[in-house]
Each structure stands twice: as C-alpha cells, then as structure tokens.
Length: 403
Image 1 (cartoon, rainbow, N blue to C red):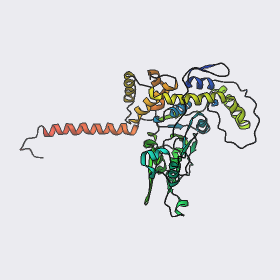
Image 2: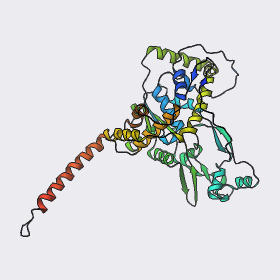
Image 3: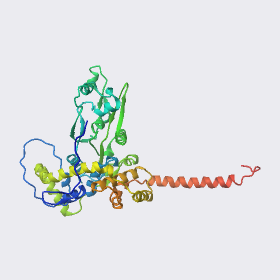
Image 4: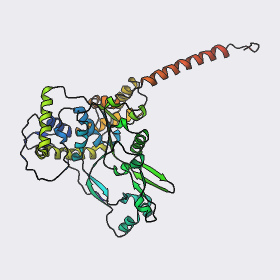
C-alpha cells in the first residue's frame, strides 16, 4: 500500500492567540501552563460518544507526559511503565493519546491480511478472500486512526495470543482467530494493573513486543502475527510488585505522584468537572493545540532517522550506566533511543548532554538489583578465595606431599 501523505515541514507555527510554537516540546509546555478556566460553550449533540480527555489539558505530571510522547515518537524505546497510587491520572493520560497519533494502514480483512504479507510470503500467506482481492487489484488495507487497545485484567492466554476459530471449523476449515496482541499491531496496547496479570500472559505480551511478531501453534494449525505496538503499562505498587525480569522489559519507568500544589489541584478539578459535564467544551478549548501536537509528532517521527548521537554523548551515557552498576543492556538502548526522540521532539538533529540529563532518570531508575549486586559480590569473594587456594596449594605442592 502506498503512503501518499506528505510530512509537514518543520517550521515555527502560531496558535490562535499568536503564541509562537517552535517544537512539540514548546507546545506541551505552553498548553500545560495554561491556567484559564474559561472554555467555549458547546452544544450537546445527544450522541453517545467515547471522548478522551485532552492530553494537553492534563495538569502537571510533566515527566509522565514527556515519557508517553517520547514512546510515540520512537517505539524503539521499549514502552512506558507508569507506577503510582490510584487517582493520579495514569489511565486518563494513556487514553488521551489516541487523538495525537497519525493514521496508519489497517487491514480490511478479519484475519489481518496485509499487502506486505504477499510481498514477504507469496499469495499463500493471505486468506483466500484477500488472494482474490489481490488478483482483482482491490485494496487489502486502508488508512485508519490509531486505536487504544486495552487488555482486560481477566484476559486468558488464548485471548491474548489467539486460538482456533470455531466459525471456520464449523465449515471444515482450520483457521486461527487473531488475539489481542495481533489486534494491537500499529496501535497502543495499554496493560492496566500489569502487576496483577498471570505470568504467562505478561510473558507473552513482553515477548511479542520485543520481537514485533509472534507465532501461535495449535495442533496442525499455526500462524504468525505482527505485533508492532507501543506498550504502556500502569500499576499501583500498593497492590503488588513486578518480577524483576518483567520490570526490565519496560523502557521508561515513571513514578506518578499526586499534585502537591493547591493551585494545580484546583485547576485539575475544574478541568475534570468541565469534562464530566460538558466534554465537548473542554475538548474544543484544546482542539487547536491537539491538532498541532499531532502534526508535530508525525514530523518528529519522520525526522527521527536523521538524529545522531556524538561520540562524546555516547561516552557520557555509557559512564552513567556503568557508574550506577546496571547490568542490563536494555539500559543503554532505552537511554540513547529516548535521547534521540527528545532531540527530534525539540527540532534538533543532534543529541546533547542536556538531552541525557532529561531522559536519564526515566530510562535508568529501578534498573539496579540489590540482590544481584550482593550475589556478584559473594561470587567475586568466592572466586578470589578459589584463586588464592589454587596458588597456595598447586604452586608449592611437592611430588612427595600427602593430601
């Protein structure tokens, strides 16, 4: 499928109020600092609609908002984990992201067939209906908005990865039904209460996220699905912790605390109150900034490939990881990819030391293991003792010595 969209040129833009906006970063800073409680009136259409809270209307929580935007710009960061008590806006922030993402090519088929399947695996890689469409030069996909896929807390492994389609078996065909992971391809996958999921479910999600695809085998039937999604997890630490190997798979880790300033809490209340009673009114107040942010995110994604990291910045990042005694190589991957995304977000093509200063806490916190540090210390002491014993015994051992 040919993408005929044209990237928006990166240049200063102005809001309706005349405020110059140079970058996505500046836009977020401006919208977040707005303290006015006056929103334009909006007539209720009477239709039942799912209207997300405007992302730029979220009060405070700058690190959380920054981390989510960086993950949208550069999926190689490895997703985001939001950790904090209930009622701090974690789920609201995640659900508000859908209005900021550009359209993506989406399969028109129940089984998720795409033109690239035929390019990679031939005509047999798609279902018979799509093979017929391809032969008739009919489209297999169309551009559609990015969706937020939320994983239910009671999801079974079969729901997540897929299973044999009962509708197909009724007609003597064996076909797989796509699971949630396949449905999340090119979407946002939000896993709320990630610390309460069954181990097999979270393992499947993390493996699929890391590989970008996964394979399901059920007897004689097997299928491989793409799973290129932005993974966002959230959890309340009061309800339990995550296994270390799961925690390590999330790129950015954000500790979300409640607002501490009375003025911020008042603004948050008034915006929430307006949203609950007249959602269109609040959305209209941030409509312009939301469109500009969506535009800037697309430009940042397009320009990400041009962002470079100087050797000096590489060395500074490596020294940070080494000084904090972090073993996982995912630390460097997340750190440098987040720094590149931050530079692109700020309309620059070269990462600086200041970029590292901003993203390092998000990328490196909670990566050290007290247990592993103690374990390696004990192993080092043991190895030293073994080496000394070898030298003492073997170096001075005479042929006539008795054991």
